[in-house]
Length: 119
Image 1 (cartoon, one colour):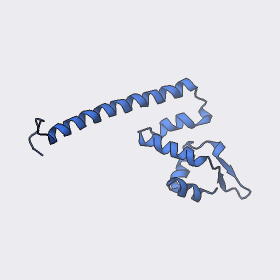
Image 2 (image 1 turned 90 degrees about the vertical axis):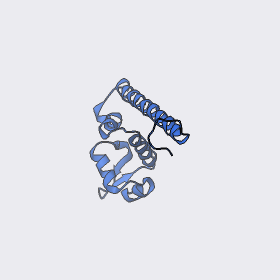
Image 3 (image 1 turned 45 degrees about the vertical axis):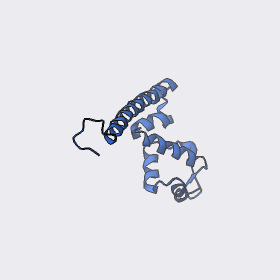
Image 4 (image 1 turned 90 degrees about the horizontal axis):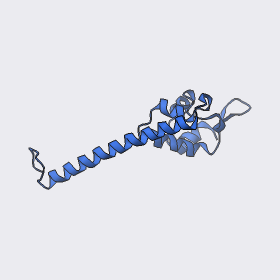
């Protein structure tokens, strides 16, 4: 499929897809060239890019993603595993803070918090 179809199916702008390619976030296995040298993407790229969007939504940086998917870097499974484990720790810390914030807001609504403005 052509880049405009990938864009429509993933909701990602064409410029973002090209940026991902420049950053080596799209493995070569998903992209071929036709006789006119146009990019032709495999069907599997849609699921892959949806996974990339998920990883970005949990604060993976472009650099971290590149480390995970760039096959030219030849990083070991253990190195990649550590990157993912560190991100899980960061997410758990965010979840902890969100639970604390939710508890405070609930207490505020119930008039039980030491907060200057009553709701």
